[in-house]
Length: 112
Length: 115
Image 1 (cartoon, rainbow over the protein chains, first blue to last red):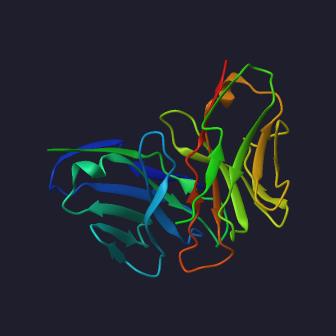
Image 2 (image 1 turned 180 degrees about the vertical axis):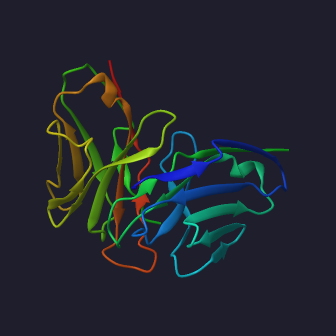
């Protein structure tokens, strides 16, 4: 019940495309859903996060869509660039200081 | 911008040896975490630490692991007797006690290789 399922495992899009990464969860106690970006050899860096009282959040080219009834959330990257090529992890947590439970990651490659 | 730092960046050790991984969290943060990532896999929680004690630990964090905040700035993870399966990237993270985003800031990681 603590798992966060993420798909797809990998994704290749052309520059300017809109990759979409999906996550699903079971634990209804989760109340904070961040997305992290990780470049090879680096630590995860927070991209954007959402709480379940909103259905969408946009920051720059990154948008989270959240469907509370379906227990799913997704990351959309508008106008994707080669510099967006990285691994993206969704995560979830309960409470303000608890552990993050990560999805399995999506390796995104943006080609020219 | 303040950041979490970790040392060393890469540690190679022989099976059975003790290792200490070091982290300097962001200075006004009060919650501290260790995570690990086996090559190509997801990031897994190990332990969280607040007010000088462990607040939560995973089943991975067995008696071979310990954490300590020996002074006001460092946060360490000790593995007493390393096994081959301990080879992974170890990330430290820290967080403010409160805030609108409750963001955990991650360090760059220590790559531990057990031979």
